Length: 307
Ligand code: 3PG
Image (cartoon, rainbow, N blue to C red; front, top):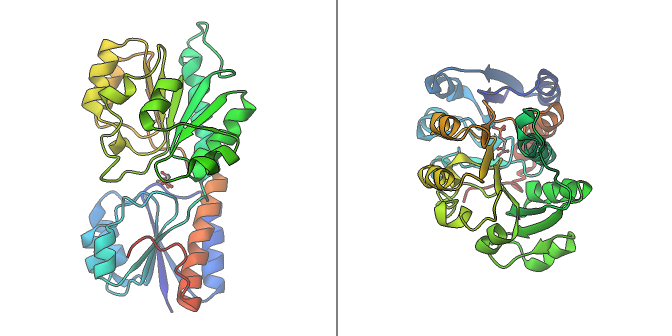
């Protein structure tokens, strides 16, 4: 009997785990659960007899892959797969997949939860501002970016986007104004919402020069990855420009410094919350189980992300 290990430091909702288990068991798979583990070594050890692994932001590094001798497929139940060592997967004959789109509405909704909180001065009782009529810039027009655009229109915002890989026509077909560059997006918009993955090109790309292009009162909201921010440069800029706000769902390494220096202009969730809804857990978790079953039974590698 093949074993599926669900390794989640930040667990799925219990109902999602129940559904995932029942689908897998119904197809003759055994499910092993490793939740809230404290040490990476626990994940490495638990991977030893797994034929398939489902993770979230858990780190699937060389050690995990080297110890997982039976492993054939690993699925990141979510969008970003920067937490998986893709080269090690390929070297070990493991297919790595993600479940694109399954948690994107949850992340998009959190963007607006955080934005309302920010423009209303973190609910401190002082008069704030509204989102209606403001220019929102969406950096990267993937599944989350598209959902952000949809919700933003409901708020009556003017929506702009830039995506290095998505043609202008596709952005405009979604009723969003496409701008020519990342620089133009920051220059044009009152608020910029980040939806870029963490890659060699994007790491540290949100830097002093770029954010400094924003108009007075600019807000950057990050539900993507902390690595895309050049933290030292953003701190320097926010020291110089007391009008800027930074709101994030991914706690920066320099969280304490941001919090101490920028009271009233900085907020981070204590733990990444974007995809943490019952619906997103269910969608992404069940998609992951189904993809594993389809992989073993039909060789389906549609969502493969490694070579
Ligand atoms: C993703 O890449 O899907 C999101 O960042 C959500 O990550 P999480 O599953 O760790 O909450």
